[in-house]
Image 1 (cartoon, rainbow, N blue to C red):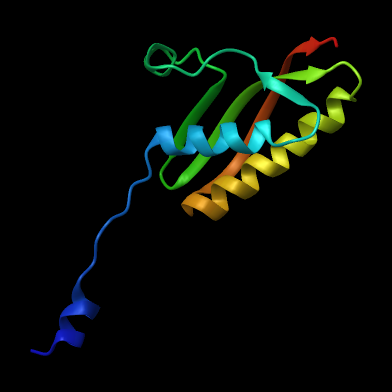
Image 2: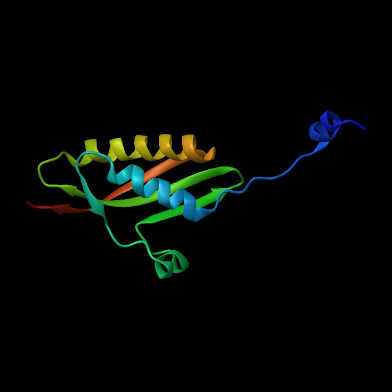
Amino acid sequence: MEADEIKKGATGRLKISDDVIISVSKLAALDVKGVVRLNGEIGMMSKLRGNGPIKVRLMGDVAAIDISIVVKSSEKAAAVAEDVQEAVKENVQNMTGVTVARVNVTVGGVAFD
């Protein structure tokens, strides 16, 4: 049996942690113009309780992401939320290979300068 035959027959499984998806989502959202911060803190307790600003639900190999943001008062909240949806979906799919079915964005606050 040659090495090429072994490589073809070998299969494995790759699992991406929710923590990785949360981290990628956070960075993508904060990079969008008009987003001041997330609406809450991401910590170990918020992940365990499921009450942080980013929630990830994996259904097989497909993710649904909920994210809550705070928007600058000088920006249009709806436009910023749409930009966050696109950025999070694109970044998570490109960086992890996990298909994102939807990104639900909640504008949880407005920051005044």
